[in-house]
Length: 271
Image (cartoon, rainbow, N blue to C red; front, side):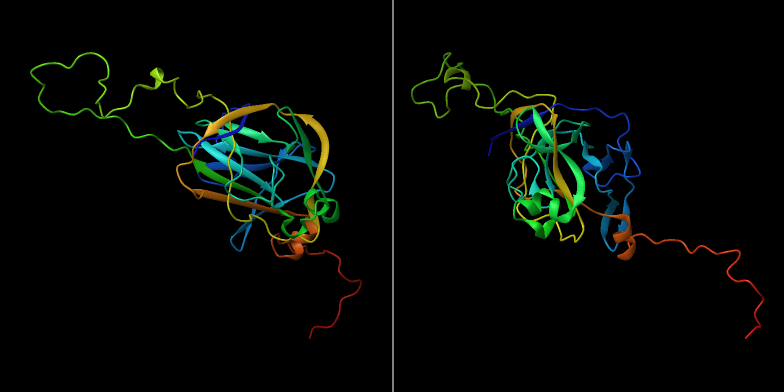
């Protein structure tokens, strides 16, 4: 099923992966724009976490590691980052060409503008302010491959004694060529990115940190078509986030024991 989606300008990366990247078909990283660094990923009990700082703007970097086009449906706090709908897999997303990447900087407002992502208190998050507080605290990317048309093959039957006349007969079982009936219905391919979506919620409840609806910024995209190879995504990447103190309290980050050289004043008797 071909649908019109958004085609985004691409950013090529010389290095496909990093210490903060999560994923196989696609690498997903969270980049703190305020501090200009990729956030380190912590793995705990089967989930990935990053530390967010309230007030800091961030962006989600998605890098296609495959040799073909993919569709990446991006969810923030359980909300589709393009359409603003509660995220499900059949919605819109960004289409990335082979080995290409794109920075998702915010909530898409038009083909040219986004409202920047920034870490903020849970009640001030965009999801909570639009009545959807239950999935605040997670970033999700659902990855689909493009459907590949089967290659044409030639019948190896012996040649006929007489060649048929040029042109289609009225009783021919084959349709007329596409260019004879108005051309192909497929949109031209492009070297940039596009969109598509999921079919289940990608986030979990977070009591403290969420993503706000920030300042308007330029992020130009255009429309394109994409036909998914499968109904369900081939990969779903989830990165949870919260404050440093909350992740320590949850056991995600373990603080080292620091020995004090002067814990007391006098020498006590041994026990």
